[in-house]
Amino acid sequence: MQSTSYKPEFSLSPREKAIAQLVAQGLPNKCIAKHLNISHWTVATYVRRIFIKLGVCSRTAMVAFLMKENLLWDR
Image (cartoon, rainbow, N blue to C red; front, side, top):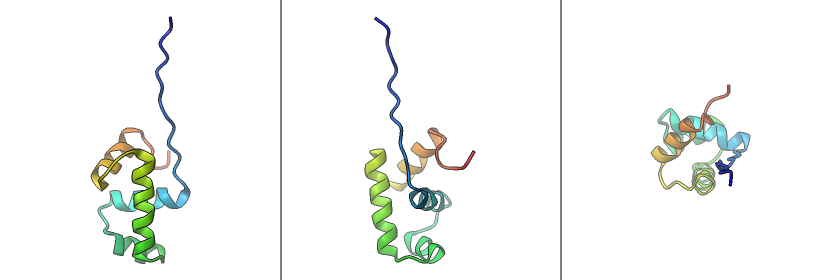
């Protein structure tokens, strides 16, 4: 029996990816909101959605996961 390694695919929307990149730069939600011209509550919602998609519970874990999977920056 052949073992197939399952590697789930994680798809972030362009806005989620932009927010993840700004989080990776160490920016807090209020600065991200100002940079993207959206409310900090909207940023918090996006961050929570990213956490759910990736199965993580912190900003550090999110960035580490995205870097490990090479999903943070454009190639």
